[in-house]
Length: 212
Image 1 (cartoon, rainbow, N blue to C red):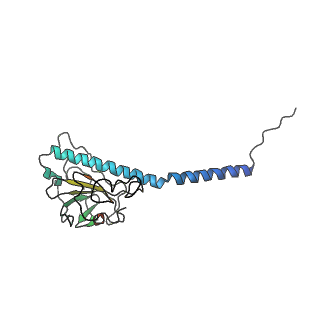
Image 2 (image 1 turned 120 degrees about the vertical axis):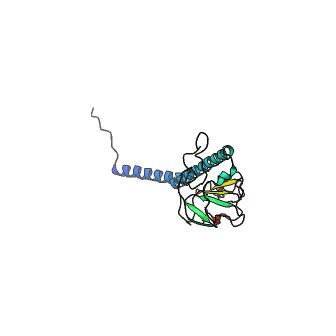
Image 3 (image 1 turned 180 degrees about the horizontal axis):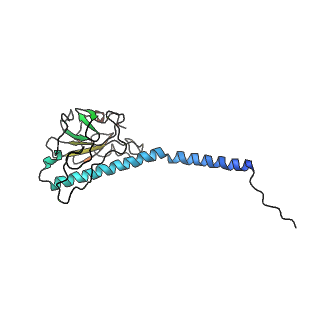
């Protein structure tokens, strides 16, 4: 008895399969939204960075001889919040001159000469951080939206705040996982951590142009 060979796919059938796979790939790509996933990953890094810096600064306050070291190094001249007159000691990548961002110290050193001017080098056992973190998607001076880390201390050098601007639709203000308006701080569109979260009473646009 003569056996017939199995029939292969026709060109039309192959094209249909390829078209179906292309449609499935497109749907998956849209569903996953890789651009948004990258933004969420950077936001997660921002929250982790601010948590690390807060822990390091609290460790310093606990182990240093004086809380005045919150401003070890030189604060930027004229860096004050116009409403509260608290002092911006540093902003990552930009400095606040009054309430306007301008190019500044971008060093990550923890010896008091970095963008966050607290000298961790003299701590017993060494610094809890090897360098001060910088925003994973840092923007330049006056950019909209502003993305950089900021550090604000009060005049008495006893309390501080750290700030970051979220970029994903999840963690931004009014997002499904909004961390900006629910962090207990006074700015609803900027993420804040620290010992006191109301050092700033002016709008976030003063030092975060076009936040979010």
